[in-house]
Amino acid sequence: MTDRIAAAVPTFLTALLVLAVWQALASLTQGLFVFAGPANVLRAIITEAPLLLGSAALTLKSAAIGFFLGNAAAVVLATIALAMPRIERLVSGVALVFFCLPFVATGPILRVIYGVGDGPQIVLAALATYYTTYLCLLVGLRSMPASWLDLVRSYGRGRVSEIMHVRAMASLPYFTAGLQIGAPAAFLGAMVGEFTGAERGLGVLSIRAMRGLDVDMTWAIAALAATISALAFWLFGWLGRRLGAGPPPLLLSPGRQDLPRSKATSLARSLGTFALLTVIILALWLGLMNVLNLSPFFAKRPQDVFTFLFTDPGASANRAVLTEAFWQTLSLTLPGYLAGLGLGAGLAILLVLRPRLAAGMLPIAIALRSVPIVTTAPLLVLALGRGAVGTIVIVAVMIFFPTLAACLEGMRRTPQPVLDLFASYATSPWQKLIHAQIPAMLPAFFASARMAVPAAFLSATTAEWLATGTGIGRLMALTASTSNYAMLWSAIVLLALAASLLYAAVHWLERRILKTFASEQLAL
Image 1 (tube, one colour):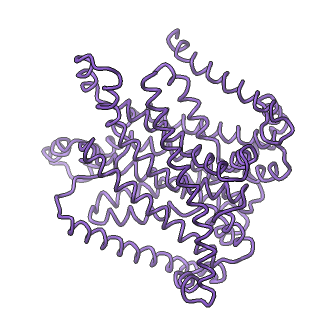
Image 2 (cartoon, one colour):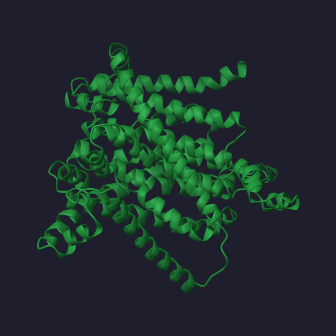
Image 3 (cartoon, helix red, strand yellow):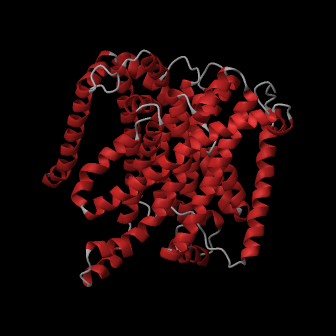
């Protein structure tokens, strides 16, 4: 018990420091409608407890349903990819494209399809969840040594026993990690869905509070949403530990050991996969529109987008508007993305070199990563201005905390025999860091970098949608309100394509760097 109390002291002191800084900022900016002090936030929560808890329960219900559906889809997709490895790249590509769809644009379209109700909230919660679980689970299902599978076959057991008794158990730590990451994302997706025209929920309260400049209520909603998300994160971690799932040995490089191929063969295969993936995406797009019998007025087909951008009399003007808005967003998204990755990895390295700081910083980081961007974006823009700095900071904040947690976990997975070897040679902490811990961190860093790509575009477009009034986020919100659905669908296609290409670029860089510095991580 004494050891537990001693371990909790750094976290407690850090929490007190955060509250003190928070209160100081609130006092310095009093009257500017930016910060609400902890006491005011607590008073708002107590005063409006019935309304806040009732709204949170509605949002949590939608998030839970979407979370369940998203994870069920992830299990099905991972099973298909494992059972049929020849089509794994196509399955992963389709899953990635849907994951990269911008919530700012898909939310209004889902609202038109579903009307009043929980449909958009549930769908966006599922979309926010399924890919992270799919990625984690797919790695986990391959993470056991080949000798384990040989042992199962030596006893005459078949494919079912292999999956149930070996692969499923080996994947449990990864699956738990996916659930932990997905739980806060599902709650965020549900809140974004409520922003598109729901009648009740925490997202609806957020809109009302922000429009009324009720800073105390806005911060109270943010604090409540962060608490729920952090509790969900902790709950699935606790559940994993109860089931015997420790931290995943590697977090998380989905690579596999392919047979050697020439560059020409690899390029031809990549181009063929891309062409087939494009055909599948277009077929799914067109098929869903026709099967659901959605009105062409708002549910644009691929040919409608092509006509709008290339053959319509005003196509050049349409492209000019779209590309100008897109470059505005991209010029702020990339610096924020890189800044978030750099700060997250840099602080993780600092905490490894100064481990006493980690006990206090990591719980705070987990709590702050759980704050929904839809509640913090307007406040940060008010504090930092509507220029480039505000949006870049919002993107960096969205990327920073997940990267920090992933990199810390990655360095903690450095094999103990390797650390013992460095200790036996009395190497300095810097040598151990550079030659052992950073290579062990690289898979976690790149996994976080890949997963951060859609998050970066989400945070940038959300800031533009709710606060700055610039870029493609503003364009999508404007076209949704004016029923210019051809432009809205064109923006969806462009953002999904940009996010998918950036994701692929990060994955390409990951393969090249891991091949040099951590080649054993590729043979999963």
